[in-house]
Image 1 (cartoon, rainbow, N blue to C red):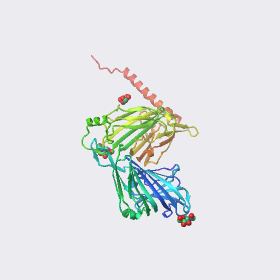
Image 2: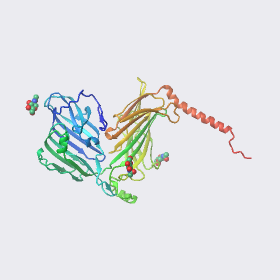
Image 3: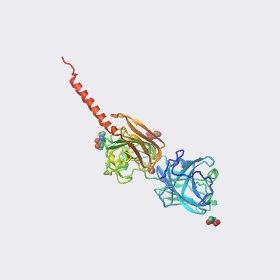
Image 4: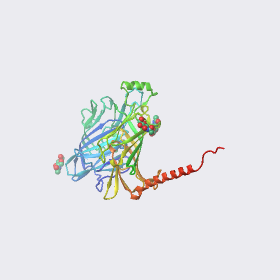
Length: 488
Ligand SMILES: *[C@@H]1O[C@H](CO)[C@@H](O)[C@H](O)[C@H]1NC(C)=O
Ligand SMILES: *[C@@H]1O[C@H](CO)[C@@H](O)[C@H](O)[C@H]1NC(C)=O
Ligand SMILES: *[C@@H]1O[C@H](CO)[C@@H](O)[C@H](O)[C@H]1NC(C)=O
């Protein structure tokens, strides 16, 4: 499986790649490009279909270009042939100073002959691509967002016809850029609005646009201003600690979440009375966040949730039964979090969420290699939110050796060290993975493999026994000593 993650990384090579990047950009032409931008809050999904035609025999590397801003926003990118499920190998060809753009090379499943055609679908998820407009809102005001972009889709190849659609989640579109002077593209109506969809184009005979010259003379900035009824959430920092205990046959997961409501910042003071009244009539705007509903794994127990003030008892957990060695998906437990106060636009809320699971739901033992395999979910997904920074720590049993791991996507940073805690003798290996800009598309499982020598299995009970023994001996000694205050 080939998956590219985080275009912010300097270079990411995945899958099998052809030995050299063919720079010749006359190997293809686009017979059509259709882009659909699903406007959202923190996440914007962009799907671009390139109908391509080979202009020479053996054409196999198709290049796509991302402008500086587009590249900054793109947190996830995946290419497929239309109607197929296999993910195409993708190479980050890096920044090209002559054009001022970032290029990716997509490897087609097989070389195309002259005049052969195919349809490539490129899906991306953009994060931090919208902003509240107006920037401030009172407790009763609705929420609207703005998305800014460029009209023409950048491509190193010439394009016969192209069309860009913006789909808003609500039909309330306050404004969008209208255009004039596009006669050279033989366009009848430059832009049309129909319900919640705005369509730019079709534009005909667009020259190769991945050049500085095109961008500075022929590109048009466009913006869409739309009403958005969902919360705009950012997790500025997520710290996950997953602790594997063979002794207790338990997997404990604890998430430390710093949440930011990126909706319009609250104008004036927060009024609880006003909030309760609006709540009563079900009229709280989306930038007033009363709580969150999270999906946690099935089979969890002893869940806890606390914030800076302490235990929050207004949460509700509906537990789904345990499913040993389940695959991805399936059923899940639902946790409804209700902070002490609603989280208003611009506010932050930090909380800790933890639970225990039977280890057998996640772990397997490979008799052939004598190794344990444990699958740790990468993160708790908060619907619609981007996780700006994530640190995932997997704490292995004491004395584990031969530690190895396969992450679902390459981390920005990773390390393995040893951590010694209470009642540990030799310490526990800890795997730390760091990521940036995670979205729902990045959810996955970290597979950790390790061995636990038989002697290590005994260390914990031994350490506990010794600790108890010393307490007992101490207690005994204290009893024997006369430490009462002497009274004459
Ligand atoms: C490819 O298409 C061009 C233009 O449509 C045509 O002139 C040419 O003969 C075609 N070549 C082959 C090998 O089909
Ligand atoms: C936290 O609140 C829950 C729900 O009321 C309760 O079951 C739990 O015992 C509390 N935990 C602590 C540590 O007070
Ligand atoms: C929220 O947190 C961010 C950084 O995580 C900080 O820059 C910002 O000032 C905080 N906002 C408030 C209202 O505390």
